[in-house]
Image 1 (cartoon, one colour):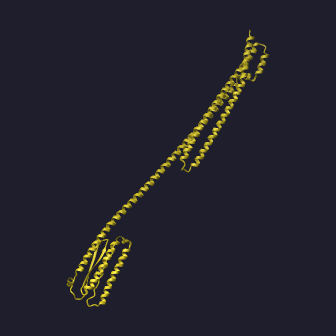
Image 2 (image 1 turned 90 degrees about the vertical axis):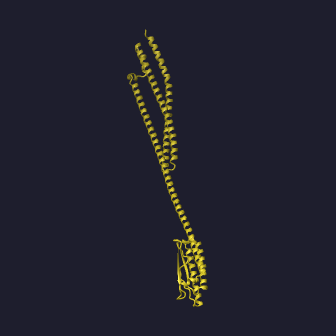
Image 3 (image 1 turned 90 degrees about the horizontal axis):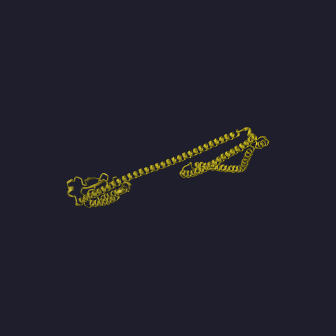
Length: 391
């Protein structure tokens, strides 16, 4: 980034014998050249690359104008017939070097160059000193601006590094959040898997209990069938005869031995029927009680499972709130709850049926009890008769 303060020119001063018109023209040319230099400096100062040194350029322009005016005035006043020497300075801020070109113009032909030193004025010496001061001052300003520029560049590089570090931190935070989300999703999937496993285990345990209860009921029914067959096979000929026929046989008997045998048969029949009925009633009562206890335990177990399923439903609903399969699982749980409620209702109905059967058995027992007492009395009577008939 360089800008020129002065443009190198070679000015030829008119000789002493020239007219005043030529002198005026020469002065006008000098003024025009100074104006052109000013416009060039203004254009260069208006560019965006040279905005950092606008103040120093303005000072240099002002000093340049004063120097040009002073040189024009002195040249027109004192040195109309002398050879003039002037210096043009070109300043480049990037390299920090100054270039001075000294040109000598011979005003009068056949003059000696040694006479020029005799006619040097102290004003020209001061001008050169001032120019050196201005150049040194401008160089100092240039160095200051360079240091500032370096500091700004260092600051900009540091800020760029900070921006990069912030970007890296943001990327790390994003990755950390993604990892946390992945961990949470994995934990939710594991919880769902364990809940499904527990549900499957509960269903399998219920199925096993149902199969065991079914096998127990089948074995109990087979035992009852066997006991009934055994009771039916005892004295098939006597089983065909009714009590009335046996009583008729006692009435028609001629001897005491026949009466005794028929009475024994009747008493045996009564005793066997009593034992059979008692056995049947006890077995039925035990079966009914067992079924009642099983139904009650099943109801309690179903209630506990229902409560457990409700808790699982609540936990699964809380865990599956942000997942897409929430509706399907809720429907499945609702269907399970409905099936459990239906099982409970069926168990309650079975309990009611068993209760009704117990009541019917009690009524049957109450009806059979007086008949049994009459049979016992008749047995005692026949024993008394047999004891009387024997001598």
